[in-house]
Length: 167
Image (cartoon, rainbow, N blue to C red; front, side):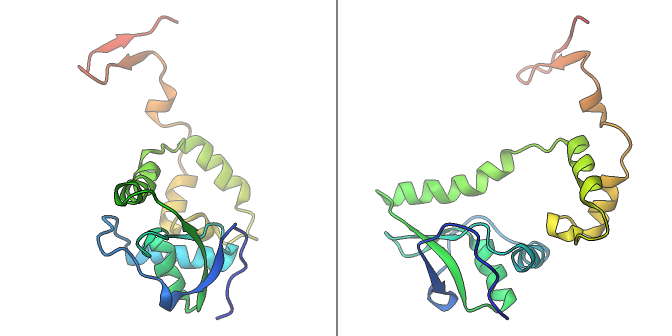
């Protein structure tokens, strides 16, 4: 396959065969995730490079992108080489890269509105990262979820007490 267009900053294009995933990366990638990621890279090009540590020579960020590139059958990928001051700094970056994405929250109303807006029939909606079944569920929800509709109370995250808010 012809390599996807590269839209991201990177140090150099590197042969996939010379890249080594970190064998202790605690993040795992399902076949479905890699299939979708490969489709996204093929459809939209490279929007983020694979990050490799100059200290260890291992992939720090982009293990999924590496697997997707292998699935696509491309020979090279954009790589950003990074210096780390210590093994601990390298591990912290690897772990943080996985963790920070988990902390994001999606506003389902806004997501639904954007999905409906771009679903013109001209776009491959799987390039959003959602499966057809997930897209159908997201796009057919009516109104805001209950937790987004109600502003009449707030729950203490420490003790669970519910406080009524004044109008």
